[in-house]
Image 1 (cartoon, rainbow, N blue to C red):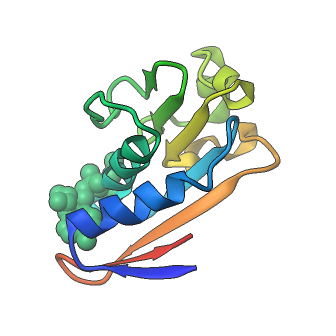
Image 2: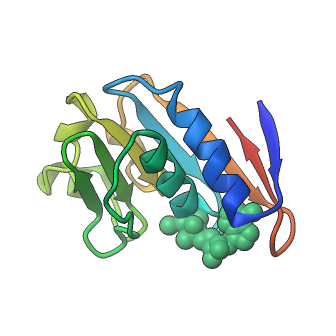
Length: 132
Ligand SMILES: Nc1ncnc2c1ncn2[C@@H]1O[C@H](COP(=O)(O)OP(=O)(O)O)[C@@H](O)[C@H]1O
Ligand SMILES: [Mg+2]
Protein backbone atom coordinates (compact mmCIF):
# COMPACT_ATOMS: atom_id res chain seq x y z
CA UNK A 1 0.00 0.00 0.00
CA UNK A 2 1.23 3.49 -0.83
CA UNK A 3 0.04 6.67 0.82
CA UNK A 4 0.90 10.31 0.28
CA UNK A 5 1.05 12.29 3.52
CA UNK A 6 0.90 16.05 3.19
CA UNK A 7 1.49 16.84 6.85
CA UNK A 8 2.84 15.64 10.17
CA UNK A 9 -0.76 15.01 11.29
CA UNK A 10 -1.52 12.86 8.25
CA UNK A 11 1.54 10.72 8.92
CA UNK A 12 0.37 10.28 12.51
CA UNK A 13 -3.05 9.11 11.38
CA UNK A 14 -1.66 6.75 8.70
CA UNK A 15 0.59 5.22 11.38
CA UNK A 16 -2.27 5.04 13.86
CA UNK A 17 -4.29 2.95 11.39
CA UNK A 18 -1.26 0.84 10.55
CA UNK A 19 -0.90 0.02 14.26
CA UNK A 20 -4.23 -1.82 14.08
CA UNK A 21 -2.65 -4.34 11.69
CA UNK A 22 0.20 -5.13 14.08
CA UNK A 23 0.34 -8.16 16.32
CA UNK A 24 2.29 -8.81 19.50
CA UNK A 25 5.86 -9.76 18.66
CA UNK A 26 5.94 -7.99 15.29
CA UNK A 27 9.23 -6.39 14.29
CA UNK A 28 8.85 -3.42 11.95
CA UNK A 29 11.76 -1.83 10.10
CA UNK A 30 11.24 1.89 9.51
CA UNK A 31 13.32 2.95 6.53
CA UNK A 32 13.96 6.42 5.18
CA UNK A 33 16.56 9.17 5.20
CA UNK A 34 17.22 11.45 8.15
CA UNK A 35 14.20 13.68 8.67
CA UNK A 36 11.90 11.47 6.57
CA UNK A 37 9.48 10.98 9.44
CA UNK A 38 10.36 7.62 10.96
CA UNK A 39 10.05 8.94 14.50
CA UNK A 40 6.81 10.73 13.62
CA UNK A 41 5.48 7.41 12.29
CA UNK A 42 6.52 5.74 15.56
CA UNK A 43 4.55 8.36 17.49
CA UNK A 44 1.47 7.49 15.42
CA UNK A 45 1.91 3.77 16.01
CA UNK A 46 2.20 4.38 19.76
CA UNK A 47 -0.97 6.46 19.68
CA UNK A 48 -2.73 3.66 17.79
CA UNK A 49 -1.61 1.17 20.42
CA UNK A 50 -3.08 3.38 23.13
CA UNK A 51 0.28 4.37 24.61
CA UNK A 52 -0.06 7.66 26.44
CA UNK A 53 3.65 8.37 27.06
CA UNK A 54 5.35 10.94 24.90
CA UNK A 55 7.45 9.21 22.24
CA UNK A 56 10.91 10.71 21.96
CA UNK A 57 13.72 9.80 19.62
CA UNK A 58 15.86 7.07 21.19
CA UNK A 59 18.98 8.28 19.36
CA UNK A 60 21.22 8.28 22.44
CA UNK A 61 19.56 5.46 24.35
CA UNK A 62 19.31 3.21 21.24
CA UNK A 63 15.96 1.91 22.44
CA UNK A 64 13.01 3.19 24.44
CA UNK A 65 10.74 0.68 26.17
CA UNK A 66 7.09 1.67 26.46
CA UNK A 67 5.82 -0.68 29.13
CA UNK A 68 6.89 -3.82 27.30
CA UNK A 69 4.20 -3.10 24.73
CA UNK A 70 6.33 -1.13 22.29
CA UNK A 71 10.10 -0.99 21.84
CA UNK A 72 11.30 1.90 19.69
CA UNK A 73 14.86 1.58 18.39
CA UNK A 74 17.21 4.01 16.70
CA UNK A 75 20.28 2.10 15.55
CA UNK A 76 21.91 5.04 13.77
CA UNK A 77 24.87 5.05 16.14
CA UNK A 78 25.31 1.28 16.29
CA UNK A 79 27.93 -0.08 13.93
CA UNK A 80 27.16 -3.78 14.06
CA UNK A 81 24.67 -6.42 15.01
CA UNK A 82 27.23 -7.68 17.50
CA UNK A 83 27.06 -4.34 19.36
CA UNK A 84 23.27 -4.61 19.51
CA UNK A 85 23.55 -8.14 20.91
CA UNK A 86 26.09 -7.25 23.57
CA UNK A 87 23.88 -4.36 24.71
CA UNK A 88 21.01 -6.83 25.08
CA UNK A 89 18.97 -4.98 22.46
CA UNK A 90 18.14 -8.05 20.38
CA UNK A 91 16.38 -9.89 23.24
CA UNK A 92 13.20 -7.86 22.73
CA UNK A 93 12.89 -9.01 19.10
CA UNK A 94 11.54 -12.31 20.41
CA UNK A 95 9.36 -11.03 23.24
CA UNK A 96 5.72 -10.11 23.34
CA UNK A 97 6.07 -6.45 22.43
CA UNK A 98 6.07 -4.70 19.07
CA UNK A 99 9.50 -3.50 17.90
CA UNK A 100 9.87 -0.45 15.66
CA UNK A 101 13.42 -0.07 14.38
CA UNK A 102 15.00 2.98 12.74
CA UNK A 103 18.34 2.41 10.93
CA UNK A 104 17.94 -1.38 11.13
CA UNK A 105 20.41 -1.49 8.19
CA UNK A 106 23.17 -1.12 10.79
CA UNK A 107 22.26 -4.35 12.58
CA UNK A 108 21.01 -6.32 9.56
CA UNK A 109 22.79 -9.54 10.57
CA UNK A 110 20.93 -9.90 13.88
CA UNK A 111 17.38 -9.08 12.75
CA UNK A 112 14.73 -11.81 12.95
CA UNK A 113 13.99 -13.68 9.71
CA UNK A 114 10.45 -12.37 9.55
CA UNK A 115 9.99 -8.62 9.69
CA UNK A 116 7.57 -6.02 8.39
CA UNK A 117 8.78 -3.00 6.48
CA UNK A 118 7.68 0.61 6.27
CA UNK A 119 9.41 2.99 3.87
CA UNK A 120 9.06 6.76 4.04
CA UNK A 121 10.27 8.91 1.16
CA UNK A 122 10.65 12.66 1.33
CA UNK A 123 8.88 14.25 -1.64
CA UNK A 124 9.10 17.85 -0.44
CA UNK A 125 9.44 19.71 2.86
CA UNK A 126 5.93 18.66 3.87
CA UNK A 127 5.05 15.71 1.62
CA UNK A 128 5.99 12.10 2.23
CA UNK A 129 5.34 8.88 0.35
CA UNK A 130 4.65 6.11 2.86
CA UNK A 131 4.93 2.55 1.63
CA UNK A 132 3.44 -0.08 3.93
N1 LIG B 1 4.17 14.81 5.99
C1 LIG B 1 5.02 14.72 7.01
N2 LIG B 1 5.10 13.59 7.73
C2 LIG B 1 5.98 13.46 8.74
N3 LIG B 1 6.84 14.40 9.13
C3 LIG B 1 6.83 15.56 8.46
C4 LIG B 1 5.92 15.77 7.37
N4 LIG B 1 6.14 17.02 6.87
C5 LIG B 1 7.12 17.56 7.61
N5 LIG B 1 7.54 16.70 8.56
C6 LIG B 1 8.63 16.97 9.51
O1 LIG B 1 9.71 16.13 9.20
C7 LIG B 1 10.44 15.80 10.39
C8 LIG B 1 10.55 14.31 10.53
O2 LIG B 1 11.37 14.07 11.64
P1 LIG B 1 11.63 12.63 12.25
O3 LIG B 1 10.36 11.86 12.36
O4 LIG B 1 12.41 12.85 13.49
O5 LIG B 1 12.55 11.98 11.12
P2 LIG B 1 13.41 10.65 11.18
O6 LIG B 1 13.06 9.92 12.45
O7 LIG B 1 13.02 9.89 9.94
O8 LIG B 1 14.85 11.09 11.11
C9 LIG B 1 9.67 16.45 11.55
O9 LIG B 1 10.29 17.67 11.87
C10 LIG B 1 8.28 16.67 10.96
O10 LIG B 1 7.61 17.77 11.54
MG1 LIG C 1 14.21 9.28 14.05
